Amino acid sequence: MQQALIEKYGEARLPRYTSYPTAPGFSPTVGTGTYGDWLAAIRPGTDASLYLHIPFCRSMCWYCGCHTTITQRDEPILDYIDMLRKEIDLVSRTVGGRPTIRHVHFGGGTPTIMQPEEFRDLIGLLRARFAFAGGAEIAVEIDPRTLSAEMATALGAAGVTRASLGVQSFDPVVQKAINRIQSEAQTAEAAARLRKAGVSGINFDLIYGLPHQTVASCIATAQAAIRMRPERFAVFGYAHIPSFKKHQRLIDERALPDAALRSAQAEAIAETLGGAGYVRIGLDHYALPEDSLALAAKRGRLRRNFQGYTTDACTTLIGFGASSIGRTAEGYVQNEVPPGLYAQRIASGRLATAKGYRLTAEDRLRAEIIERLMCDFRVDVTGIAARHGFDAAPLLDGNAKLAALAEDGAIDIRGGTVTVRQDHRFIIRAVAAAFDAYIDRSARTHSKAA
Ligand code: SF4
Image 1 (tube, rainbow, N blue to C red):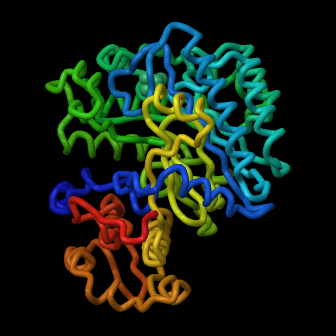
Image 2 (cartoon, rainbow, N blue to C red):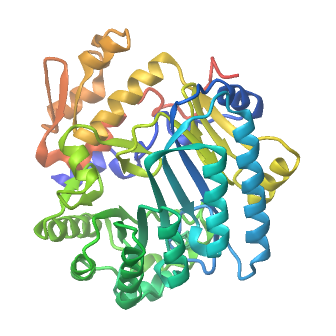
């Protein structure tokens, strides 16, 4: 039944809605000039988040879906950090008023590929150019295989509050099949070093659907990870798209679990984490009940952004680095993806914007409906539409997808509120897609894009 509905609605192929509209809808018609205007319109004291992308790793994990480059040399990394610093200067000169920074996220790649002093200097520059709020959250993605004691200390000293550790699977057979050998001891040591340095919020990323993975190995990995007691887990299904990510061709397709097995693995991990006291949050996150993410979910204050579920309520996000995505009140922007092209643009003194999207009033309405669904599994469509100055009727009554979902017993619609039934939460992306005006279009036009 579950599998039949997943296939009927194409759940696995639908967006994860970390933004609306989603990134494939961005267009080069939003470029440097537009982004410059949007930055200039930021008012002093606007709550904002920063994202910095570090696109380098020492070895390639064959399942990787990130924008990253493998290098054994330090020179390209140093050159890149130099460009990041230039971009930070350029953006800070372009913003209209100094925003108040409440969240910073270092993603990659492997941000901790930097040397401790390089990281310290970069944080120092950010603090000099922007006004950080007291208690601002600073989060860093970590590869436990390469985290030195010195780097852990530097992260703590720089005020890092959260660390997200890639774990994926502890099964040695799976690790060999994905080219990522990482012992339990390495992971435990990295977590212990971070805690000792004062980084109090630890997240582990786990993946199911990897080659040779079984339900039993998923449970064993979750149990081993639970013993290290991270505050949060993010659990993702492996997306095998070798036509898009060439290194994924190194993965033996015959060893990949089928859709039914993937679903059983996801459920087994969910049950194991739930049994250990972790609260399930949204589509794919878990947290200890006292963690801020669990509390935000309980209070209906959970948010969703490019990093997934978050407590970050800022609507302004300034991205730095190759491929980074940002958002201002007017819309989304994305930097050039190839690090060489990004560097060229910054070296010439210009912003590195490659494409973006200017939000319409209707986009904002649909974005809020989709975000609430993804976070709460329920949404007051009538109330949100009224706040945005829209009539809810076309969204509800004339919505064939919603009617089909109700017919299949996946949702209830009462008094203008759509609720996803507890036992149908696996189909949340299909419910969100029922409010996506662009999902069925193969090519879009942007009537208001500049
Ligand atoms: S460490 Fe992370 S970003 Fe780097 S190759 Fe592995 S999965 Fe990709």
